[in-house]
Length: 331
Image (cartoon, rainbow, N blue to C red; front, side, top):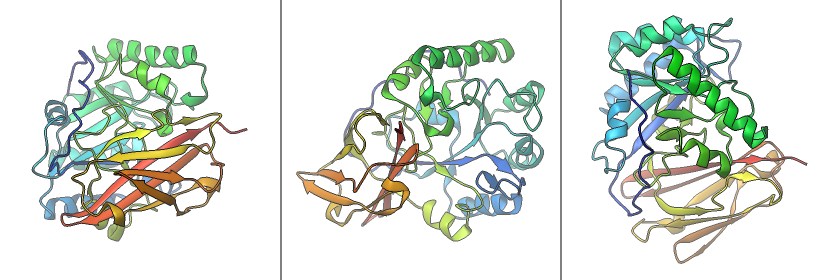
């Protein structure tokens, strides 16, 4: 379905709310068993969808996501996203989603379209005609754009926009960063071209989340286990006012000093647990609290190109989750 990209979304109003949130799921391949890190088996995918239905959560139509982003959600929403437009999506998951009219966003990188293993523009157009199916921009080349010089990054995005305008007649309002990697400079450019941008860090979207750093839970053979899925699908947003540093690209400040400023209304903050993977090893983070501000002192440098932090706590409403991904410039 067409959603035109007019002006950028307004900045979030920062206040604590009883927002049950929108939990976004990220898929890639379907029934491509040779790629377990990005694949999900169709029988498992169908069971995941049934779990969502049994819990009576609502599948979020991306059009409503846009219209109601800044409003608290009184009912839990589930947003399905699929990256890369692989042929296996079209052949396996698309017939199931179409038959059940389950809404989703398909993020397309324009350069590989029509190549072996990727959908064609005719197939993308077929999907885009349905009222519950939306197309998102996933860059042109799907390279490690964080490594690009800024002008090369802009050229990549502008090329994708040009092709979308030629092929579909519009540029999508949704963008997805390849590998979930980005810098503040890149985000500021994306703001001029799109209304929303998604990363690959976990968490639940609420009205306080930055619309250009939206979280998604990756689902694959390793992280698509039904017991894990049952747990994560119930997660609630862990709301916060702001995060320092604002720029998630680590260059000369490895490791950074991370501070998260929470709302005074959030219960049980002292029971929060955070884990991080500096040194390419997951372990419990060293945290300090002062006046609703949580500071994480990392044990050592991040040694992989992406560094992650996940925090969770349980309050009277259930389990809440917050995730963050740093992009790391390695020595």
